[in-house]
Length: 103
Image (cartoon, rainbow, N blue to C red):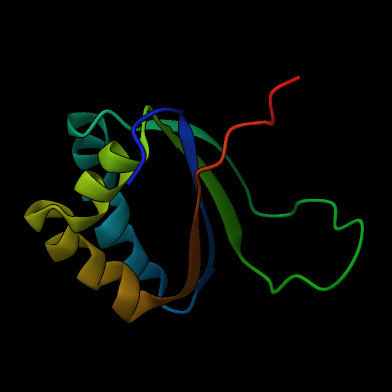
């Protein structure tokens, strides 16, 4: 793991059960903040410039490091909460680690 650069966590979420997803949303922000995560933005209807995008929400979250992101993702409290999301959505999540190349 690398602790050298800020990272971005990006998720695309297709909500299949609104009530189940609301259970996830209720607990999300306190856990994210406790792990130093910064909610950057979300969009339910972004402009697709190329390719195909499934309906749903895209979310971007920032962390100071890869280690911080993975500590949040693997924390017992988030793992427990994520069960609501996993039951209520179809999700693709990625972690962008690499910093821009040196000039």
